[in-house]
Length: 309
Image (tube, rainbow, N blue to C red; front, side, top):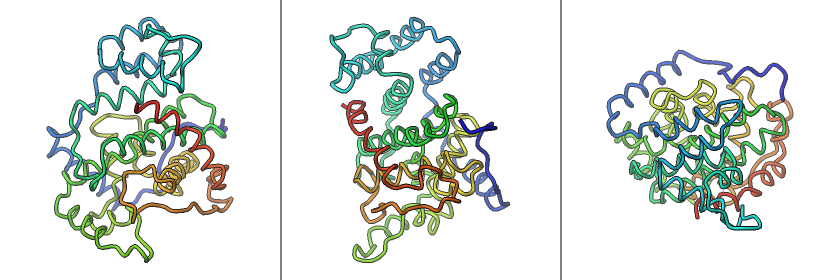
């Protein structure tokens, strides 16, 4: 664990950025009825999971209050990825097999699926592609982060921010309909043989903010996530502006790997194709090494496939 870690903050924050934050929050307020509320079951689970001495029986009873979640937990626990010596039929055993992070992922995905999130922002991709990318980034980011941080709270925040890191892409057409349409037209017109702009760059050129910033403000204002989770979800494209930068780098590099291996919802023209070697003074630590990042992410592909099966 990195000595003295007490949460992630912005190392710099301009007046313009604060203005953007308030504008995004105001736009979210205008479409509040269309936004997914934080799932009640997820809120209750987080409360149980945060208790130092976890009561597995009480947690299992909470899971059983949502039949679709209970079924998904049992299915995942009996999947080839987790399967033990025998088939299990009790939620308690299934939870002990899959662990806290995977329970969070399944709960979030099922709860948000019930809300029928808008898909226009996926630019032709499917929600399955969105969740596969989000879960792989979350799992890969935690794998990278835990080489430095052993604190469970830090890793939980990285996981949650990884799951939500692209949520702003789903919300952008609701908040900025005309600029978003302009961004989409720009992507469609990109020259596949030339140097393409990243999704972040396209959003900034047309909307004035990128989809990550929307994700961060959504996490902060709509879901009342912790400041650390909100900062990571909102500023992962710019790790150097986060203090300390390493955990933001973990999400950034996991996202790049997922894009480069094709597990991504973004149009191919906007994807990262190859990771560069980072300078040692970047604050990325072990994530400076592309091979390490790729191995950290790819090892979780079977897990993500099990989660989505």
